Each structure stands twice: as structure tokens, then as C-alpha cells.
Image 1 (tube, rainbow, N blue to C red):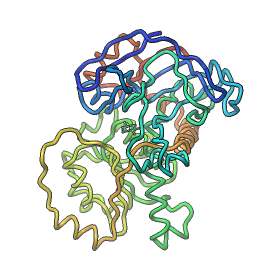
Image 2: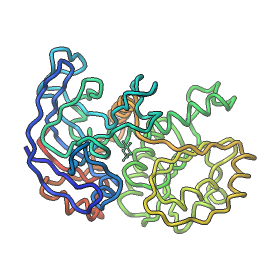
Image 3: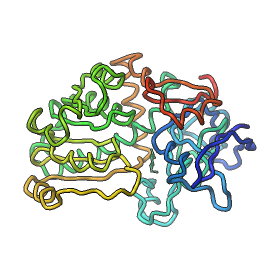
Length: 368
Ligand code: BGC
């Protein structure tokens, strides 16, 4: 079968031949891959950045945002049946710590986890994949065409869930209002697929959503944001440190831009007792000058939380699948508009140059 591989640490990708994996153990599930999204992490890997091949090998099959259809399952599998649509999660535990033992490798305590398509395990840009039942999430057939959005959405499901849980234990108003997000001003920074999915998720929860980026108001991403009820902030006209004075204080900020200077400046938009979650991974090592004393003073005097969040557990994938289904009921084909499909042969061209009109580029491996 075909697969797309990279040699970690070098630039470029190529189509390779791999033997088709089979169900060997009673808890194995085999998926025929339908589509796989391309994200910032893939782009970093293909340009020679953060990536690691499986032990003893030099090549890594790339891709971690997938959707597939079950074609075979071991005798002990009960979560999915042949014909079901499903996604596999990304991270695999270290086998040593309590978090991984509890199925929460997203909170691994040793740092020895592996990630399919990123770190030490082959990924999903290929025709068939096999993994254990504990990593599979069944999805409704209606999501077959958009299921690759579940992984990036799971990232913001986790980020928002963590932020809310923290607010519930420390803010008296959040502890007593089960739907605390309703009408709350929430800012999403960086309107790539993760940012737009965050805006969609917050809108579903009734929040008053603002999205900040530095593109023209009429560009595809701000337009997409407006349809889910979000208000666009052009960061070139209203930079992060002026959001508070122009738009008012934000109760929650979700960052998905991966630009270090912006990540610090966004603290200025956060209101008293607010929570700020960072999900973007800035590239490069350029030193950054920040007004450290002022930022720490603001955090302390404002009872604020600045929180880093990465990866997602099975439960967050489940939440993402539920929200994606709800979003499609509410906004219909608009949700599908996040995705633009390309054939396998176009991978290396796409990963090198993001398409200006596409929001999420997806490689089609088979038809749904
Ligand atoms: C993926 C996560 C992963 C993270 C760090 C992100 O692009 O979506 O699943 O944990 O990169 O490797």
C-alpha cells in the first residue's frame, strides 16, 4: 500500500510502499483510511522540525488527523463493528506513569509518550492502519466526510474543558452556574482550523465569541467565523494589547496562533479572574523581549490563569465528535466548508505552500 513518509530532521516528503497491516490481536481494529488533514505540525515536520521516526528506522509515515472506516476487528472488539466510521487518537502512553495507566497519555508524567505521525510511531497518511480498540472512537456516518476535524477539535475541547474546570473550583459564580459560558466574552486568537473550531465550539456553548487574526475582513476565515456568530477583530487595526480598551475584557482567551510575541500580548486582553489557554506551538528560537514584571503583576493582581494545553484524551475526541455533529445540525454545510480535498499526489506541494483559499487541506485516500 502507499504511504507518505518523511525522514525526520530533513526537509521534504515522499510516497513510499508499505506492507498492509493486519489484525493480529483480539483487541486490534483495522481502518481503511478515508481522509487525513494537514496541520501546522505536519508542516513543521516536513520542513525538518520536530518529528521522530520509529525506533531503529529512519523514515516516519506522517499524518495524525484522520477518519476511516472499520474493515476488520479482532474477536474481542466491542466498541466498533466492520462498516462503522471511526477515528484513531494520536498519543500512546509511556506504560510507566499513572496518567498513561488511566488512559490519559495526554497528561503523561514521564514525557516518554509516543504520537502517531509525529513522535516514534507511523501516522495515518496511508491506506490502512491498525491499532488497539482503546484508541478508536466510533463516529456517526454523517461525520464520515468531516471526521478529520475531530482531532484538531479535540485539542480545543480539552483546552476549554480544563479552563472551565479551573474556573468552577475558584470562581463562586462559575461554581453555581452550570452554563457559565453563556453570554461570556471569549476571545480566540489565530483563525486557522484550530482557532475556527474553538470559535465554533464556544458559540455552541452560547459564548459571546471574538476572533482575532491579521487577515482582511472579507477573507475566508473571518467570513467563516461570522457565520457561526463570531465577531472578527483585525489585529492589524486593534492589536492584542488594545483589545481590552476597544472591545472590553475577555473572560476566556484561547490562543491558537503559535506566535510567541502575540501569545504574551494576549494577556492584556484578559479580564479580572480570567483564564487564558495556550495551544499554539511557536517555531524558532528567536529571543523575545517582554515586560516581565508588568505581566506577572497583572497575573497576580488579576487572579488570572495562563495555562498550556496539548493533545487530547479519548473523552475529548468523543466530545469533539458530539460537537461536530451538533455544529452540522446548526450550520449545515458551512461546517464542511472548512475542508478542501486534494489527491495523495498533491501532498508535498500542499504541505510546502498552504493554499490561500483553503482553511483545512485534506488528503483523500478513499471515498466515504
Ligand atoms: C497534535 C497533538 C500533538 C501535538 C504535539 C499537535 O499538532 O494535534 O495531538 O500532541 O501536536 O506533538
